[in-house]
Length: 156
Figure 1: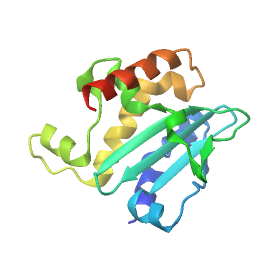
Figure 2: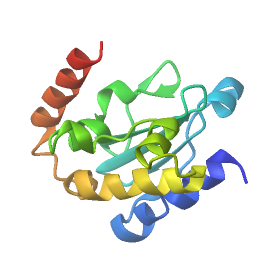
Figure 3: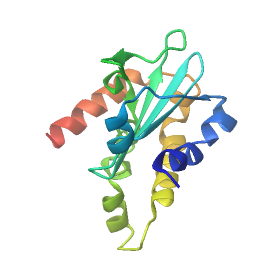
């Protein structure tokens, strides 16, 4: 099963629970190999899920969409304009952020965690720490951006 298929399945709840529709993510051959991604959106909310194959890291960004369009830069969705899941989780404490697939295996005391389980873990974190954003409530936007800056300062 491809990484993209696992991502689509792991985040299918966005369609059912939040009414977001799957969108084709603009990508080139390099992106599809090294940073496979999926996106979901309605007119107000967008979600981009990218897997960095080199770092074995799943990044989730939530967007406050204007007219249903993702912000774009150089033909790609501009994730810098979104609110990261880890920044939202960081507000509950640094230990709530999700690391790389390898990091999460280590947290589980070496218990083997397959990729689909890692995706499921991240999906659960999304509903736990960004439910308000997924419902279109961006009242915490400034707080989440500050948390993102704090995270960068701790890990330059």
